[in-house]
Image (cartoon, rainbow, N blue to C red; front, top):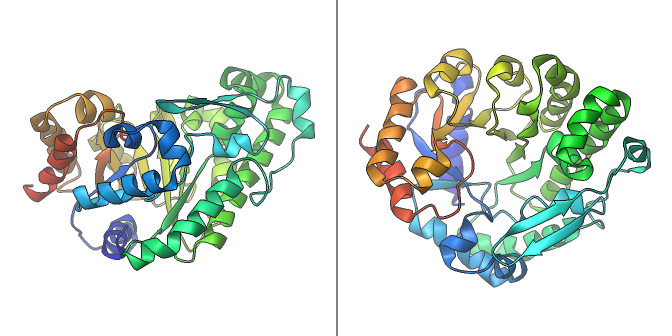
Length: 346
């Protein structure tokens, strides 16, 4: 992203601590579910041809100059990077992100797992190498990679064990499940640190973990809260963004105490209610419905939803206008334009 775009995002993300009113900015999480189709290329080409990957990411910044894309020039292979480092079989598809196949088939197998080495394991070294390859050329064109991303500990655990099996393990084999989360927590931390070491301008980290919302309040406090807190406390000098578009209504207050600055959450949670509950603690990022409105609706519906978000936060205080999740496949350009227009006419 451009330096000025990052400064705008950072200013809003940290505004809770400054007490200053700010402009309403538009930011979107974009990755392989949307970008290849938007560019008219296959997912295989997007993942394997660096020139196509770069062209796509450069084009959207030129086409939507007012939008801050997160994390920006994201080298990702769907959700496969972290699971691949543990040896998960990855199944690739021509026109959709890859699928992951569990590598743990019994809770007793968790004891053999080790935290992977980002420099050597799975797809991680490919990501790091591509980042190093493109970073200098991006800077020469005025672009900067300011934030890096990783899947969170429960999301990784769900891929390694199978989601249903992992959730059952929390009750049937809590000791083994906790050990798995210790390993995946360190994986998230070390993967973010490895990306930071390879990119000289990183000022932010983003963690994505929807599975946290599947837990009861008591299970959240035992199996998620301490691990998220450990992750965010490992990056005290970075802007910290957390994405979770599952139902987190029952854990909002506890979740907001884990140490992130920005929460991207589901449109199924009312923006006004969430703002009243935790809007004085963190910056909210959302929450136009990503599929029903931003992808399938018309521009007027997008503007209406966006303006409602602004109104419910008293003119956009502690708000980054966005989708209530990542950008969905087939989201049209005119609807993204309408999202921006809502901030210009408030």
